[in-house]
Each structure stands twice: as C-alpha cells, then as structure tokens.
Length: 380
Ligand code: T4K
Image 1 (cartoon, rainbow, N blue to C red):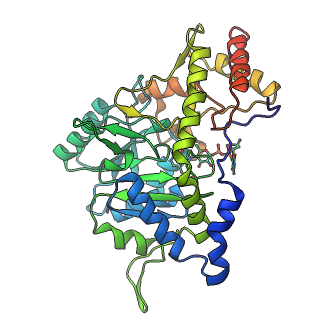
Image 2 (cartoon, rainbow, N blue to C red; image 1 turned 45 degrees about the vertical axis):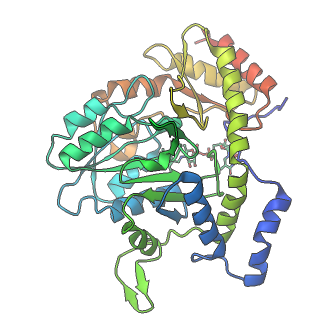
Image 3 (tube, rainbow, N blue to C red; image 1 turned 180 degrees about the vertical axis):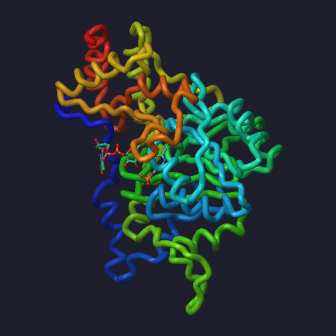
C-alpha cells in the first residue's frame, strides 16, 4: 500500500526505452521545429486514431486556440460560441482569448456532457458561429445530435477532446471509430496528467486537409516561407523530446487503459450501493479510456463531498473537485455569466469529486479509498 496517493500519477515508459528513443537526437542535434521524432509521432498518431489529418502542438490549450483560429471562428462577424461551463479553465479561456463570446449550455445528468436540446435552443441566435463541446472525463458527447444541429444552422463543431484520447465508439457495422472522428476538429491534450502523455503536448485532428498548412504555420509564428509570414501566429511547436515520449507511451497505451479498467471496476464494485453516492455509468457501444474516476454526492450542498475530500486528505490521499467552480463562476469572468442558467452543471460542480485514478494504483489502495469515502458519509 502507498502511504501518499495523489489524484493521478503520470505514466512513463521504461527509462531504457526512452533513452534509446532519444539517443539519435544526440547525434543529429535537432531538438525542435518539426524534426524526425515529430514526423514519426504524427504518423503513428494518424495510424492509432484512424485520422487523416493531425497537427501536433506544445500543449492542448495552444492546440485549441490554434484550431479556433484555423477554423476561422468569428471571421464572418458571428462571434458567439456555444460551450459548457463544466470543464477545465482552458475551454472557456480559449474562446475568450480569441475574442469570441462563450454562450453556456447546460449539461446532461447522465454523462455531464453538453445537452443537445440546449444547444439547439441557443443555436437559434444568428450570432452563433460554432459549438465547442467537451468529452468530459472521456465521456463522448451526443456527437450525432450536435452535428445535425450544426449542419442545420451552418455552425462549426470543435471538440475539446482533452480527456478522450483512446476512447472509441462502435459504428453500426461493428468497426470502431476514435474520438478524433467527430465534428470539424478535435483537440487532444497530452499533458502529464492524462491517460496518454508527452510530458506537455497536444494535437488537433481535423476533417478538412486544407487546414494542415494553416495549423502548422500558425504554430510557427505564421511563417510560410523563407521570407514570408502570412499569419500573426505564435510559437506552439512540440519539441523532439516530447514527441519521443509520445512514441514510447503510445506503445504502452493499451496496457495503460487495461490497468485503468481494472481500477475503475474495483471502485465500482466497492462503491456501488453506498447510500447517497452515484457513479458514472459506462455507455453501451463505447470503449472508455477510464481517464477519471468521478463520483457524485447526493444533495444540493457541497458539504458531503467536501467532508469526503477532507477525510481522504487526512490520510494522505489526494482527490480533486474537477470541475468546481464552473468556468462561468471564475473571478476573471465576474458579472459576465449567470451560472443559474446552467442548473445541472451548477449542481454537479457541487457534488462531484474525482478519486485517484492511474494505471498502477494498487487495488488494496482502491479498497482503502472506498472505505474512507463510504465512512465519511454522514460526517458533514
Ligand atoms: N481542456 C480540458 C477539458 C482540460 O482538462 C485541459 C487540461 C485542457 C483543455 C488543456 O490541456 P493542456 O493545455 O493542459 O494540455 C491538470 C492539468 O494541468 C491539465 O492539463 C488538465 N486539463 C487538468 C484537468 O488537470 P491541475 O492543476 O489539476 O494539475 P496538478 O499539477 O495539480 O496535477 C494533478 C495531479 O497529477 C498531481 O496531484 C499529481 C499528478 N501529476 C502532476 C504533474 C504536473 C503527476 O503525476 N505528474 C506531473 O507531472 O491541472
């Protein structure tokens, strides 16, 4: 048993494997700016995701900002983007930092993803140009409903798929499609805390191949030729050491997810039936990546959830309120949004606690965590 458990722990390949992967860099002295490892990793990702078009980035957030830019959101004067407030700061910040206006739709009770009925209602506003849903915790949004609303209204769909790397959905013919298959583009985060990491990193998968040069040039200062700069781009390139980490971690991803599946199953076994606790259901026809282990504490007030978090902390176990507060409640947005307009998201943010989840979390530790959580009930 581990005496100190954090909410997650980065997966790392065997050291020798990583050293072998980066050894050629000591010969080439080529460390960044779309080198050999970058090219190789991009190719492997396309293969793994079944995606025709992939662009790598220094992190998920920059990838999201670049995707907003490359899709031309706001360029035709429509500046509103429908999104969810039940997410990490990055999603909302990316919209605002690109000079656009987030319009918050509520989420569904069933899987915490954006509610298509709300999207349809908000999409009637002629100033809306896009939908930016989040596959939160790796739960796939209702991608078909969202796409048909977008098609009807002429909206772009950009998924924040930061949590969804490795998630797949079964097609009617029985084959599997990755989370990269939906909308106009999807952003993945490869941050150290994710199921699949490149230390820091991210990618955009996209439908229109014409976006490839735009994304690649945007992440390199907008440089389009030796003496040409066509965009006011930034610097968001993935370096060779991170790409090498991705190449190694990709080899171990299936094993990583299989181990997480066992951890999640143990949590469910131990916590199912505990009074006042709710677990996320697994969805038929979807292969989960078991990115997070969210549990919900019944009731409107956060006291029960906070008591469990404190009880865990007393014994050196870290848990996180992903995602509390809602992004619409952040101090930097004070006075701009009314979180009572998204009552389901608001309630979930007060009820949710993410328990430790990583591949090597010992099952005895899961049992101990569950005993503490169950024992904390009624301590508030
Ligand atoms: N969209 C969504 C929906 C996202 O969730 C995120 C990122 C993004 C966009 C943006 O993607 P990136 O630009 O980050 O690629 C973490 C991550 O920093 C962030 O990537 C992630 N979402 C968010 C949900 O979680 P913190 O502030 O909770 O991280 P931190 O440093 O407290 O770490 C949490 C735990 O992870 C630690 O207790 C221990 C473990 N850990 C952490 C680090 C940094 C490791 O094991 N190794 C490490 O290197 O934000």
